[in-house]
Length: 396
Image 1 (tube, helix red, strand yellow):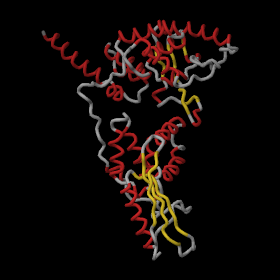
Image 2 (image 1 turned 90 degrees about the horizontal axis):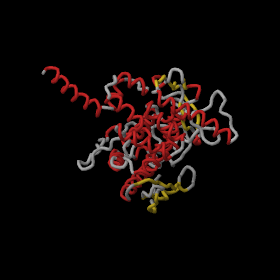
Image 3 (image 1 turned 90 degrees about the vertical axis):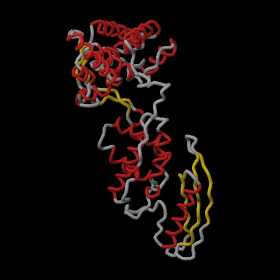
Image 4 (image 1 turned 135 degrees about the horizontal axis):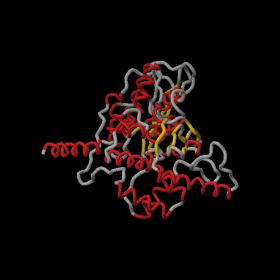
């Protein structure tokens, strides 16, 4: 396509997250095959210099006669210049068939929040190692799961390679930065000591609803995941053997739909013994729940009655327990932990009490004992020190 005239207009625009990017619109010339003008718009550049570099490539491509208009609807081939978002959409269709609905929704949400705003409009062959490295460096201080974002990017590039669209995965050549812990700011412990837990539960009992208190008490006494307790039905509570059976979990799917699904892993299906005090609290809550629901016009006699339901006797929103927790912590200036921190508290206190890590692993529903040991190394290190002290006493 000889005699082309490159006329480009560069401008900045702002993403929803406040990040500014560069774009350009350009007229390349008249296509000799169609007789129509070739125009294109490219977006997603961090600097004007990057935009000019891509424009130069387009100019060379147009002059050589191998330029293909963006968005041309053909079967993908190795020569197509496809955007990250386009490949992501293809990958998404297949990924949905391989995982649980809740897993799919969490993964897609992570892409939409973190990765697509930065790389979505960029062409796969124009995303460089430097682009991804800069993205990694920018996120290391902002997000704990920054490594997952790089994995997400790499996954799309691998899929593009499998499709024959590109030959290399630049994400594989990125140096993953390490989070630097400040010496003045020790890592926050996401669990309570025995005394802290007692205080938290006492204040929750005094200041919040019976339902909120029962949830917090059962959570700390069982070590269950939040979704496991929100999916718990009364038929899974055995007052004779003082135990609960975890057979399902509450999850969020497409359109923020709440539904019950199989637990996280095959090891997550389990029966957990519960102390008599907590079982007594559960029994009293069952009676009170029946009264509360009856006043609202609902019966709790159905087989699948939830232990924790909303005022319409349906699933509680997944955010509700966190609101209960936050209220007690904020109102009383307690040390901040998360809902998952109650699960960590349960495991930590049992380990410190000397219970076998294998038993704790089974209670938590971990796939292996190694997961338990890795997660609670802060306790096992303390136990190791205690063991050496005990051995010294034995030898005295």
